Image (cartoon, each protein chain N blue to C red):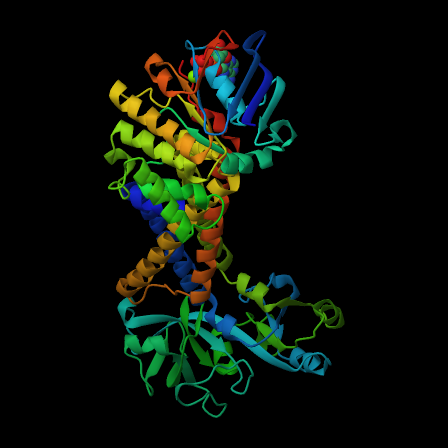
Length: 373
Length: 225
Ligand SMILES: Nc1ncnc2c1ncn2[C@@H]1O[C@H](COP(=O)(O)OP(=O)(O)O)[C@@H](O)[C@H]1O
Ligand SMILES: [Mg+2]
C-alpha cells in the first residue's frame, strides 16, 4: 500500500487517465445492466410478479403463450393432483384501446389484455378502484402507467378491430407484459376478443392459453404423463419463452460480456506496460532485498485502488444519468445487479494484474547492476 | 575475522557456443570496518565479482561466506531475505525510487521487512544527517544533485544494519570533488559502523581512501595494497 499510494500520487495524470477509462467502462456496464433489467421488466413483469412455480402449456406450444391453447376443463384435473396447491387459468392478447372509435394511432394505446379469474391466486393487488368481478364482465383493471395517457376510473374504452368495449374500474402497479402495460379482464371478456373468429378456439370448451400452478414440490414430468397433451415448465422457462425476451437479454448480456473482457484487456495491458517500464526500478528493489510478494502487492494494490475508485465513480455517474433519462425509457437500476457487476469488474481487474505479477517474478535483480557496456 | 570472504571464485558465462571466463580463481577477504577497492579496466569482471558477493549471481566454482553463512547453502527465496538483512547495495546511478522522498527511500527498506517503527525513523534521520542531508528529508530524487543522490543511496545501504556494503562504481556519474566526498563518507560509515565494504571503481584518485586495493585484470584478481 505504501509504494502503491506514493506512486499514484507521484504520477497523477497517468493514473487519472487509467481511472477515467475504468470509470467509462464501469459506467457503460452499469447503464447496460440497468437497460437490460428495464427491458426484461417491461417484457415480463407480470409473469415475474406471479407467485407460481410452474406453468402448464399445450404440449406443442414450445412454452409460449400465444401458441398454446388448452381447455379450462383441465383445471379440474390439475386441482386433483396432490402436489398442486392452487391453479389459475391464464390468457393474454395484444390489443389497442381508445376512448373513442377514432382510427388515429395517437388516440390509441397498445395494451396486453390478460384474462384471469377475479379470485385467481395470481391476480395482482388493485391499488386504486375496484377488483374484477364476474358480475361486471366489462370491467377491467389496468396498469397505472396508463394514467399518463389520460385514462381514469369510469372510462369506457373501445377495443380496435373488435366490437368489444370495456370499462376501467381499477388500477394495478408495475404490471407489464410483452413490453406493454397490462389490462386485466375476466376470462370470458378476454375470450370474446381472442377467439372472436369462428373456429379459432379449435372447438375447445372455454379455451385458455396456460395454467399457473402453485406447487412447490411438483414433479413436472409426472404431471405431463398423467394428463394428456400438456407440457409443464418452470416459471423462469416461461419468462424466457416470452417473445423477444431471450434475444433482448442475450444482446445485452453479450454487450456486458464484451465490456468486461475489454476492461480486463485494457487494465492488463496498461499495467503490463507500466511494469515493463519499471523493470530497472524493480530490479533495484529486488537487489536491495524486496521479495516478489512485496512488489506484487504494490501492483495489485494499485489495480485495486484504481478499480474501486473508478467503479464507484461509475456507479455515481450511472445514478446521475438515470435522473436525466426520459421517463418512458426502460431503465431500471437494481442495486443487487449494480453490486454484482461492480464485484465482477473488480475481480476481473485484479485477475488481469496477474500478467504483471508474473512479469515481476521474472525480473532478475542483476539488472540493477547495470553493466557498463 | 573477515565478514566477507570469497574463496577461489570462478565464473564462466556461456552464450551459445562461446564461453567467457569472467572470473578465474578470485579470492578476497574484507574485515569489519574496512573499505576495499577493486579497480580494473572495463569488462575485466569487477561487476561479476560484486554480483557474486551480493548473492545476485551463483559462482561456477568457489564459496562465498558472509558473516559466517555459506551462500551456497541458501535457497533462492532465502537469498532475497538474506540480501535484505545482510547486504547493502550502492549502485551506479538512478537507483533511487523516483516517487519516494529521501526519508521514504530509507524507510522502504524497513517496509520490505515489516513495519516502520519510531526507532527506524530516528535511525534513518540520523544516517541522513551524518551524510550531510539533514535539510533534504522531504526532497524527491529529481530535486537532488548527483552527489546528494549517491549519499542517499549510501544511507539506504546502511539502513538495515547490513554486514556487507557493496558499491558498483558509485562515483561514475559524479565530478571528482563530489566523488571524493562520497567515497570519504562511505569509508567513514563503514569504519564507524564496523561494516565490510567493497567498492568497484575506475577512479585511481579514490584509492587513498580505501584500506586495501585489489586489481582485476581479465578475471584475475590480485591484491595491490
Ligand atoms: N550476463 C552475462 N552474459 C554473458 N557475458 C557476460 C555477462 N555479464 C558479464 N559478461 C562478460 O563477463 C565479462 C566481465 O564483465 P563485467 O563483470 O561486467 O566487467 P566489469 O564490471 O569489470 O566491466 C565481460 O567480458 C562481459 O562481457
Ligand atoms: Mg561493471
